[in-house]
Length: 112
Image (cartoon, rainbow, N blue to C red; front, side, top):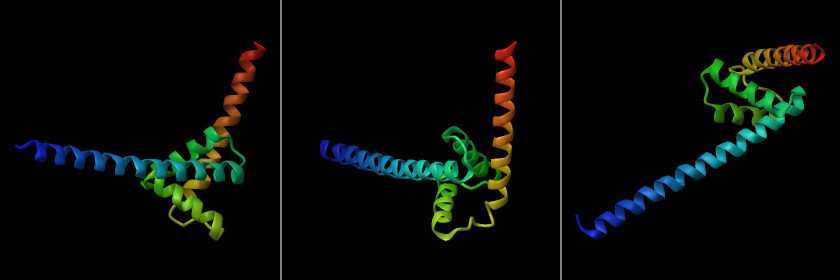
């Protein structure tokens, strides 16, 4: 293999890696924005809103970035797609329940 061929392969591999990193950054930004929407609308902490998005993704078998896109669409349309609405509601309720009970346990430990 010539040096030019080897160099061309390295350049192609680097271009592919850069493209993957750009897509990952774009997905991450969308996920962060969706976390903000969930936090604001559902009155949850950022950590809990991340947990809600993750749960919805797991329970619906929809990729997290696609769940985030649906949530961002919710902002403009006012409706969540039927495919994630029940999972979102359940995840918010589970997260609130865990958060309340976790805070109560932590408080009880501090008092003891």
